[in-house]
Image (cartoon, rainbow, N blue to C red; front, side, top):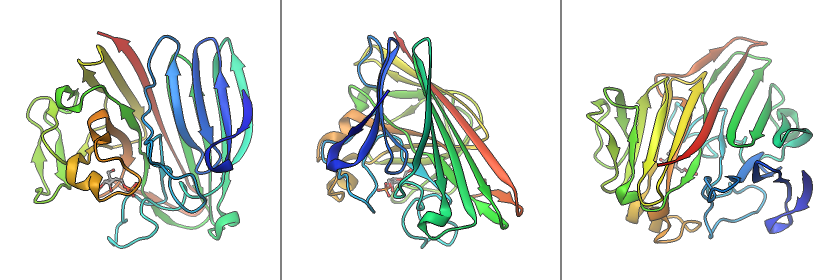
Length: 278
Ligand code: TA6
């Protein structure tokens, strides 16, 4: 584990171990790379991402909190909250037989939000486990998400299992507020769905000959997103063809699944991603 000067001269923690390689920027405590030994990178990062204070890195694993997207009022800024654009403190690392745990802390007081703080542990090895604990000194209706971008070989051939029968909100243009997932999720154009789902899911990527599995706790929503052509073109930090090699499988609490916290309350959300060759 080494502290490096990454893109945009931003500090980052670099992991090179017997079991994996990876990287986390202190900017947003943003995971930008994770590859188990012998595997191609699992986490997708845009080649067009900026690395500047105040701007979220495009790709990786943005932390969306203390609200999701544009929040409960529909106009909350910055989009996806201020966790991902804040500089976190790197508080320590442990390497246990090649599985590396990195700890990060955010004191909201440092960014004008003194009543909220957070602790985030990123455990990288043959699997990737993320644990985000958020504490508030005042009552807070919390939304949060581990907004994970996954690398896929060809989105047109990808399917997602585990969401069958789940209700979902379709946020794509013209989408309906209440749908039930029939069969596997496949991608035919812009896909932006918030599923009510507290279980496991699997991304089947035949063109890569691999499966990426998700297990989670402390989250009632799973978000599936691929911007496709038009939305990609509208994002300056997203290459016009990059959408073919990525998708988001996000672990969230949002919409009708918010977390009401009392003063002194806290919430912990946990997700594990693993890869298997098929
Ligand atoms: O999680 C899906 C989503 O809410 C999409 O609607 C899209 O806005 C995406 O997040 C990325 O948001 P960002 O603010 O990072 O461009």
